[in-house]
Length: 216
Image 1 (cartoon, rainbow, N blue to C red):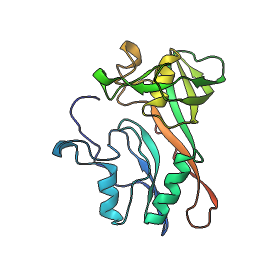
Image 2: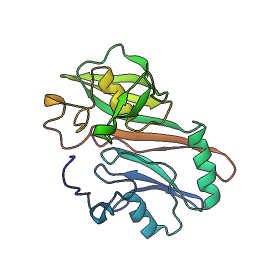
Image 3: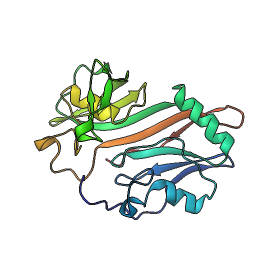
Image 4: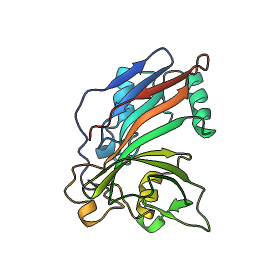
């Protein structure tokens, strides 16, 4: 999964569109924005721009993560939505399958994160220089050797959910960066999906929720 970039050739999965924004269900394995080099040019942003020429980036999901993403269709909408993310007013819910039996059934991880420079894009916990990061979790099911869990990040640090689950001793299954051995091998993708986004519409401020069911 960390080797050659081979993004899925699937049509756009549009969950909602209006004059101000478009909501999509991003497939796993597709970059949100272009990477460095022509071989990393294909991404959700360029695909969205082909269908919605005025589309503007608001936030990102990791390449290996699937699920709900919002794009603005006007500069006003981009500013409005960007401020909601900045002020942590957007509520995000993820579904993950993690290694082992996560207990208790709910809790909060509060561990500061910083980039692991020699090994970037990996992130790591650092109590001295890390930026604050908090994730709430709630177990939904225990299976054989794994746990299905909902993750609600309070902050939006890079790789936050992945590092926080690893720090608990329960890495997300199929994670090429933070899982090892049985937790990583034998999975065709990272078992992390952005299930729901709750935000205020940039035209009028009405609260809206957009959902996409996890494909695993």
